Each structure stands twice: as C-alpha cells, then as structure tokens.
Picture 1: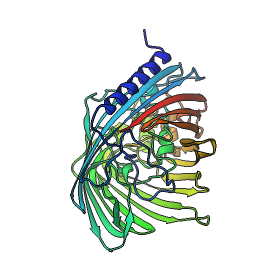
Picture 2: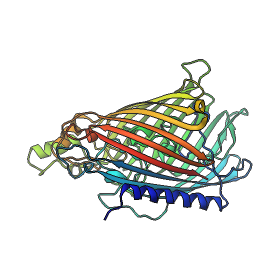
Picture 3: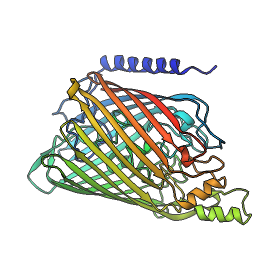
Picture 4: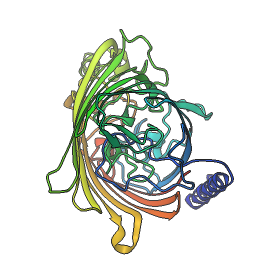
Length: 473
C-alpha cells in the first residue's frame, strides 16, 4: 500500500530533524543561495545559517538541505496521454542535499567544488506541465530513473582580473569567496556549473530554497538553457563589470539528446552561446532597480515540429515523431528581459518576458516558447517577523503554432503529450509564506493554481499545495 500524504510529510519532517542534528554536531559553515550572482535589490537576501561563517579564511565549507512535499487533489481531465499529469490525486517529496566547498588559491584566483544528492521525481514525475511545480524535481531520461548516488554538481575555476583600484563590497558564498571586488574588473570562470548560477538571476524569483518553486517563476521558461538532465553543463563564462553595469558571455555544452544526461563534448557539432547585459538603476528615487537582457543560441541534434507534422500528414509516420526528424546542427534561439525594482525597504516587484523561435524542439529545460511573469515579495518586519517573507507571482506560458499542432496530432515531447490538445495558454499563480524558525532553519507553505495544464483546455485546473523545509549550515 502506498504511504499517505500525512506519512510522507512525517518522513520529510524526520529528514529535516536528522539533518539539523547532524549539522549541529559537525564542524560546518553556512551558505548563501548558490544561485545568486551579480547585484540584488533585496539587501536582506542572504539567509541566516546554523553557524557563523568566517570571513577571513582562504577556504569555504557549507551546505544546505531542501525538502519539498507537494500534493494535488483529483482534477478534471477529458483524456490523458503518455506524458500527462495524472488527474488522480497524488503526492510526492523531493530532497536535495548540497555540500559547497571552495579554496582561494590567490586573492584573484578561486576554485569551487560542490557535491549534491538529489532524489524524488515530484508529482507527475516532472511531466505534463510547461511550468513544473517543483524546481527540485529529478527528471527521468526516456523513462529511466537517474542514479540515486551523489554526484559532482560544480567544479569551477574563477579568475578575477582587476581593472581599477577602487573596490566594492561582495557577498562571500559558494560562488565566490572574495569579500570585496575591483569596481571595474573582468571575471573568467571555466568548468562544470549551472548556467542559471550566472544568467537570468532575480532576487525576487530565482531561489527554490527560500522563494518560489515553479520552474517558470524561478527561471525564464523560454530560455532553453544548455544543461544535462540534472541542470548542469561544462563551459566557460566571461564577464565584464563596471560599477552599475555588467556584460557576461558563456559558451557551454549541449546534451547529446533532448533531456539527456550525457553532454556532447564536440563543440563543432553541438554548443550553446549565451549573452546577458545587466544595468543597475532605478525608476524610483533612492530605490534600487536592475534590468537584465538575455539572448541565447543553441546548436544540437534537434528535431523540427513542422517536419514531424508533415511526415505524419503524408503517411510517413504513424504519429508525429520529433525524434525521427532530428538533424545535427539545428539551431534554436531566443531572448529574455528580466527586471526587479525595490518599492520600499520591505517590498519589491519583479518580472520576466521570454521568447524563442519555437520551430525546433524544446531540448533541455522545458516546453515553453513564450512566457510572461510578474511577481512581488514582502518581508515580515511590520508583524515583527523580519526574516519571514511572502511572495506572489503570476506566469503565463505559451507554445508556437507548430508545437501546438504537433501535440494536437498526438506527438510527444520530452515533457508533454496528452494524445490530443485543445490549446490554451498555461496560466500559473503561485504564492508562498517562508518562515524563519531559528538560525538556519526555515519552513514554507506554498500554493500553486494552474489553469490549462500542459496548454490543454480539456484538463484542469490543478491546485497544488506544498510544504518546504530548508536548512542552511
């Protein structure tokens, strides 16, 4: 008999208690969000930790544990396909444990290495939605679960090249050990990393540990960023920073197949270019604001939606099959705009717009070709809970005409495929309340409402409540 949602929640609480005890009796150091990079309008964004972290050492050791429990009740569905979110009530728990380490070789050279253990496929095993409800979901590869063994998540060499004697403060953490940096500088990183460590960051919506959980709220859903199934790639990032503005460029490896775990090391055959400009300014006096503009081009062994549809209509395939149309070297490109604006010291707003061409197949992140997102966050100082935080966000996702027709005729993507499609834009509303219990121990209630799941008017809406337990140590 399957365990009930209540028993799953009890198991999750037991995990967090054990982790807290283990952290309390070990020699460990705190971590900030590993996904943060660049400036932020949220000046209180660094979480408290179980233990203080030294600022004057050449090394860094810290960790985090994130446990998410989600459930959805039975929802209406006229039909379901191989890649549908199951309409029957279900629950699931995901766990991510990360050990962050770093060492300062010189004042301008650092090496960073992270180990990670991630388990749990989430509700629906991460299929059936453009905006999957839990960013910590572990996807399968063509239906085959990944190994449950810990793995190397990041291995980064960071080189800082000063271009000025003036220095600015920097937050010491897993992605950088310096406490101050040259105001004008070049930074070069090479190794294994998550492109979202450095691109499309947003202090209001980029962190599934202390903020939102939905894939298309924490990231630009139309950015099909280069990564393997776990979200990591090998590559290099070159960044120029000059006080109020920055430009960063990345060259990264693509997976050999859509949603694949193995990267293609032949950069002449498959690769990804990403470029982002960032400008710090403000629409309001004395209130911080940031604007980021992102562009990307992916080259890989991709299929084409129009070709798959035409082959089916001409009787060449029994159903539209994107895999049968794959050609090495096909291109997918897109862009995104990302902003955040502080309204008061306790209140801020943020948003994203994303678009890609939608002709060649969604290959890496999720099946979204256009997205619009707006959100806001509020800290709890007015009710004497200054470390608590509330967030509300709305995301509207869409796919291209060819992508729609492909799914309507019974085609399967790596995330979507109801066997039919009565198209409608996928609308997501997400709200959370994050509670600071003690030092580095946090909890949150999360609620998501999804209309037209998987862009299908014949299914849903879906209501997904959830609980999160988080430890920073």
